[in-house]
Length: 253
Image (cartoon, rainbow, N blue to C red; front, side, top):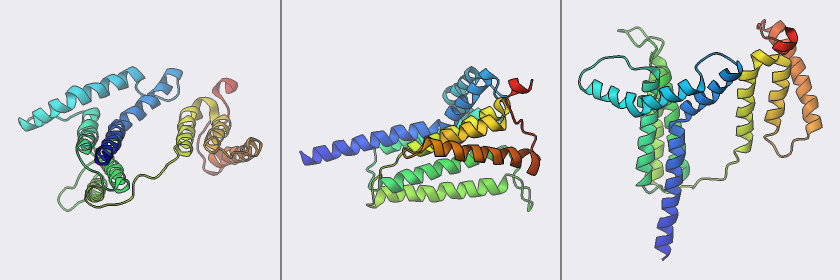
């Protein structure tokens, strides 16, 4: 009975890992979708949410398999950015997620850490895929990123393999509150800087980031945020010479 309970717990943990890896596999697509929502309100330029979802869904379900079949038949047609993202990044992580379901993970910390680093290396390979490569003895713009990305993928795969072959620590408790609010603050600043200006977006971003801690004292946070906002208002336009709007667009107009 104890063995059955242990196997059930292992299966549950593996299922949770596999689901997490599936989410990691489409993380860039999710990020672009969230970013594209800002275009509805006129924040930034780019494709709309419907276009982003349609293009990535088509690439994952049809474009990438078609590119693989075409490559096997000798077709050298250049794939789109969405298809390359699916082939270079998403499909390998999906494969890892499937393998995870059938493996016994002996060191979850090493295994998960290795897979996350592997995802970072694969993303670097995709991001540098359209850069010029090496010609003869001359390095191109994409030579170093692809070289280091491939090296990171190899080393992180070795770390993940260690998590399967050797006993080690399990996953420790991790709080998502802090990183979640910090990322939300960064996204808000990026989307709000043009329509709302430095003063509003910088102060609001600081207050969003401050919400990541349960121990935040809001009066003190507001004072510090106001001081940092004043510093940004001087630093960006006058010290660095960046042409950033200071106040909301509707007030200036």
